[in-house]
Image 1 (cartoon, rainbow, N blue to C red):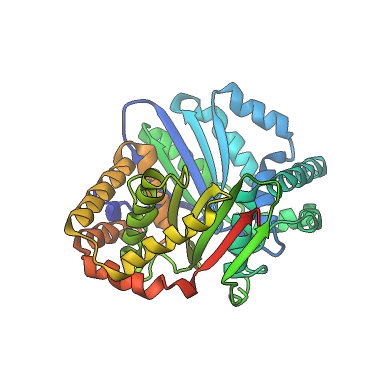
Image 2 (cartoon, one colour):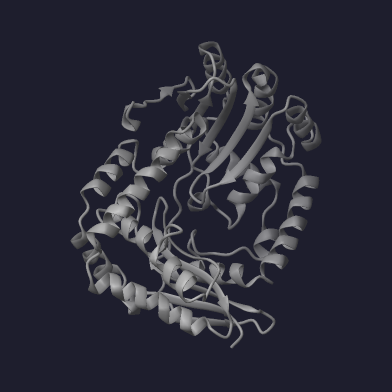
Amino acid sequence: MKVSELMPVTLKNGAKFYTICRGNIPALKLELTFPAGRPFEHKAGIATATLQLIKGGTKSKSATKLAEGFDFWGSSVNFDFYIDTVGIKLFALEKYLPQVLPLLVEILSEPSFPKSEIKLYKRQQKEKLKSDESRGDVIAYRSFTENIFGPNHPYGYNSTIESIEAFDQDDLMAHFKKGYSMDECKIFLSGCFSNDTANMVMNALGSVLNVNKPSAILEIPATVPQKRYWHIPKPDSIQTSVRIGRTMFTRNHPDYVPVFVLNTILGGYFGSRLMQNLREKKGLTYHIYSSLDTFMLDGYFLISTEVDSNRYRVAVKGIYDELDKLKQKLVSAKELSSIKNYLRGSFLNYFENAFGFSELIRMLSLEGGAKAFDELILGIENIQAEDILKVAQKYFNENDLAEITVGKI
């Protein structure tokens, strides 16, 4: 079956229901995603808080009772934040799903957001923020995203003590009612299960009545002019955190595939140029990578590493040298063939089992549609070295990149 051939069923409340039945071990994963991330917030941080506090209790059960209910039947629930969307994942044995599915339905139907849980969450978040602000790698990443997007952009703002304290129970309930509307929900049931189990899930989740006018994307502020260089002193650090990158685009941009391949060549896997030259040959760092992250509204390219504070300038120069090579010389036929083989192998991981395949379907349902994967594969197969050179020259001029370092002066 092609990825593009998998079509959802629409439940009676409007939710889209996908099933991926594979394997012979009667275990399953049930994931629900909602458009309730940062672009839909009316207050900074409310999306994350709602997701984490939805498990804080219902009208009839405390957070402890809910947790004990899942644990007793050998099940687990994860609450995942994907920036634009949020996900709730239930892992369970098929035979125990009738016992734990009602708990999930109860969480989705009548969360109460107890004030005691809100108070505990705020205390934990402030402690986490205090810890994060002492770490050079976290400071560097927070500064990078704020710099390239702007401090008021949903992808650029950072949590503060003030933003943690700013929301209350009414804010959480308002975000839940809008963001967790079932007619905007996508449900993915994967694993080994019977038709009766699939029908049970459809009936149970199709009966959840939270169907409201969905949250609209709030007005997105214009991206602010980024600083070219930015050093944040951290005298007590042994290493210097280095972040170099820029804003890019969404997955459906015509240059996505060649930049995706370029990123893989540069720093997207263990055998990449950055790893081979800065780690293996020069011994400048233990780990260095580059990434191309795409979201609903935008995306970014990022090179990231931690380097001995006495040698970070050498490492930074080495990074720009590798970028210059991509802008000045065609990738060899041997290297391009090797990269294509690597990517073919990495994509096969999605088809190894039902859980991996459902993760692929989830991502594609949110970014570019189900055909996006087939188009990505075809694009990679057909890409030429000239395509990579072209996008390298287009997007990776040094003056277009933000460079942020955190460490000793």
